[in-house]
Image 1 (tube, rainbow, N blue to C red):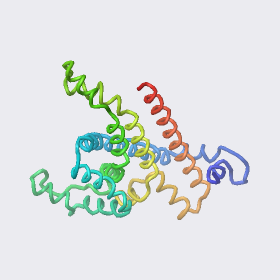
Image 2: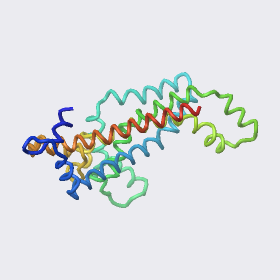
Image 3: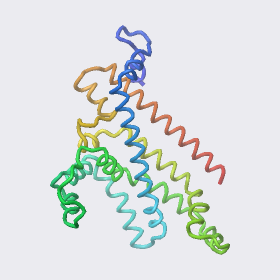
Image 4: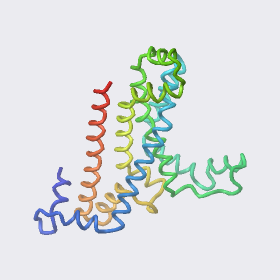
Length: 250
């Protein structure tokens, strides 16, 4: 709250929107904001593409396999973001395991640059935040009545039709909740981009840290924090509204 109030004050202490005008007037700031939103969106999308089949597999599993899936989802969350981000930074190096594996199977002839790229950031972030997408979808899938699938199949519906007209609509509240989690975490992440892309492709949280710790510019840091907070609040409120509407339709 104090940061939000600070962002509305000018150098003389009077209430003003000048700091916001200055922030959006700078092309570099707009580029960093757009990059942060783009990375968050792509991370959310990749997480969803990986999480949905994983949640389906978990829903169909039982006994030891279900335990394995649950442990595989929950255990990495206890390792900490720093450990996982550092591991990905090692994998993405030109002499890392990914380059060596692709060379070994003949996909590439020479090592390619993956570290310090936006693609590497999205992949690393999606891996770190994947459980936050899987678990809400899995929770919704567990509540589905299998009789709906059997009824659709008995009426001649293909698996493709059953997925898009039965399963997917019923799991949308879980998808929306997971997407809100991952997007909010992605726009506010600091450690992951710091280790994977460094200063080459700054994000909004990195600019906040730089403003406070190195530039000692509390006004700029407060303004960037407020912009990021407003975006996060809009995402959470929008997803809550959408989830409520989807739940009401059910």
